[in-house]
Image (cartoon, rainbow, N blue to C red; front, side, top):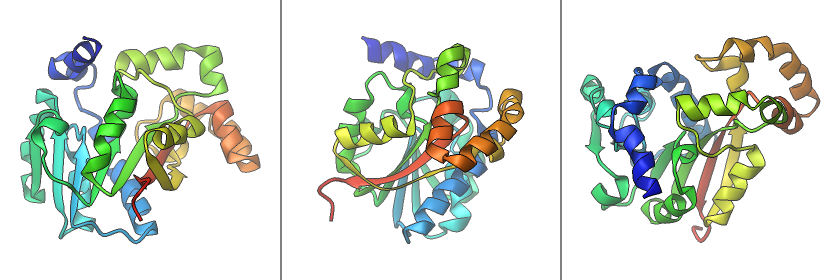
Length: 240
C-alpha cells in the first residue's frame, strides 16, 4: 500500500506540478559527472540503461561521448515521457513503466541517479536490481548534515518539493549499497556546492565556509555543512 501511495506522486501530476522542468537544467552537469566516473575506470559500455530517467536529458547528454552505446531509459511517470520525443536524434530507447516489469535483459551498466531517496523501500529495489548488470552508477544527494538536522527546514523542503523520503551522508549511502550486495568500486564527490546549475542562494552564501572546511577535511566538512552529492561506481559483490 505504501509503495502505491509513493508511486502515485509520479504517475499522477503531483510531481510534475512541483517540478515542471524535471530538472532538465541539471542534466548536462550530471551527465558530465557520470562520464568522468566511467572514464576514470576505463569503462566504454555497449549497453547502458538509466532507471528513473525522468525527462531523459542525462542520456541525451551522454550520447556525444558514448556514440556507439545502446542507450535505454525507463521511468514510471507519464509526465516525464512527454519530453522524450525531443531526444529522438540521440537514438535512445525509452520505456514507460516499472523497470522490473518492462525490461527482461541485462545491460553492461545501469544508472540510478537521484532515485533511491524517493523509494518507499530502497533495500528491495537494490536487491532486485543486482541481476540486471555487472556494473552500476548511483548518484546520491547528501541531504543529511549537522546543519540540516539542526535547521530541519532543508530536509522538510526536499521532502515536500522533490519527494525525498530518505536522507544520506556519504557513509550511509555506501553502507546501504554494501548491505544490499554491492561492492563499491569507486566514489567521488561531484562538487555540487560550487558547480551545480541549480544552487540555492543559501548554498551560494555558505560557499566560503564550505571551501575552508572542505580544505581541512572534506568528509568532515560535508557531514558538518552539507552541500555535496556523491557519485558511486559499484558492482555485484560476486562479480570478478
